[in-house]
Image (tube, rainbow, N blue to C red; front, side):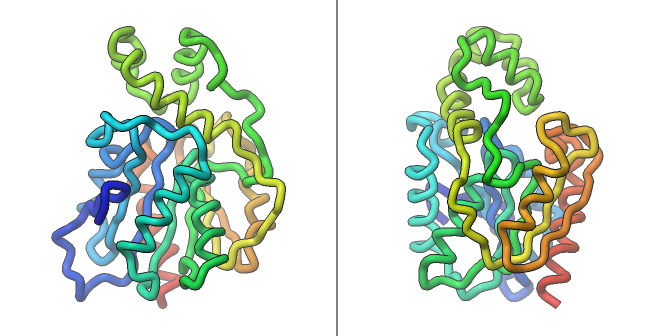
Length: 250
């Protein structure tokens, strides 16, 4: 599609597609975190955002300004995607902030709103991260990364290896932890919230507050796992996404 997005299931039969799903990864994450999903969606096209500074875009500088990143992603979507087709937005953790900002841009443009939005492991935009780590020294930051369990242990335990990834991880965590919405602008799409039943990084109240950010229906589901349940219980996340899309497309 573009350098900002990769279509996972390129071999999908276009005639069978009922919807398109844009996926926005968590801090430090990229397309590879969702690559195994491609075999689970027979009639939903998967378009995963690849932020600069990782995987096949490793040579590019990571972006620590959410406005710059969102502008770049939205420009690519406008150039490459037909918004008249049914589509959904999914984001996990940091990705939920990006989803909200992109959905606002879509709402305030001439394009059709998403048929639905899936908020996975993300507190409502009004809440700022209460225990940020992006400003800590390297040792403190790395310990904070261990708490989130989103970065492989073999990378965290290898000083030479983690030093390569630190700039990108810090940039992502600046976006994730420094973000706070103060305008309370509502979206015009139904929202499904997903939260790990053992998540200690956020509260259920912070998830439920998303109901104040939409003019449509808000529902939520618990998923087995901690904050990174998207990695540890992907089959449950996929099941909820499929059901949400099928309900909205019927």
